[in-house]
Length: 324
Image (cartoon, rainbow, N blue to C red):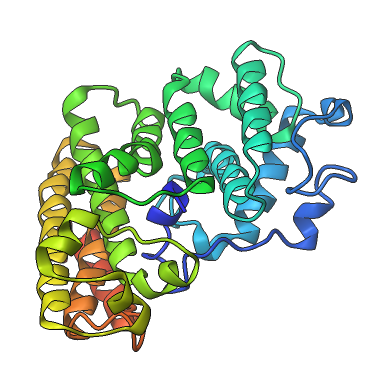
């Protein structure tokens, strides 16, 4: 799972596994459900308002996985976040639920039509308006599709740099899209946003090692596993070897350093976005602390956050501080 997963754990405490759309969304665009093949002339009858409403229903039906448009997001911007979320949510489902490269390719064709001014699918009717209003380039949307395609043919990662290369396409575009909505386009802010998004994705990966392994995915870099003497059989059997603990400590510290450095972004944005950044970064740090509290044993029970964790993170964010 990609950028959608990277923005899920904080704000929900629910597994980041993609949920299926409910019946309300299924009726949003006539007879089309969110998992039908994208495109279709029947969708052209939707007005702009209907298209935004369609995306909003999809976002709300997946609210446990939707924290980008959190309660702190300015109300007037939520519809645009819904459009971005709907784009990513459906593409993620084409990859994780349907394992369909063909649908991802078709989704990119729909993206091209939207940027050409001829959107058809309700998601792209709304998205075309969003990217026009905020002058959002095509690149972050295409980057997400690149990550989704790699999910379909998952091969794992040799090095930590390879894993960060994956996060560059799977997680970082989400943060950059948020920055565009708030009018920020410079390299410095984008770099700090990338650190937060990649760090949060890493925290989710280390939290979900057992779940991901059961789904046939190992996000731990192979070189790091070799360095610490951890085998695939160790993961399969859930062995808490000294090498595994040392490796996890190493991976947690890498993710923590990225989140703390990236959280400096909160000082470079206005107050509407500052709190969300502190909550995202603080949520990732809280996940890492939960992993440490569990003695790095991510096999016996998935480390997760409790209500007090959320209260602490939220109070710190409202006070303009990082819950480190």
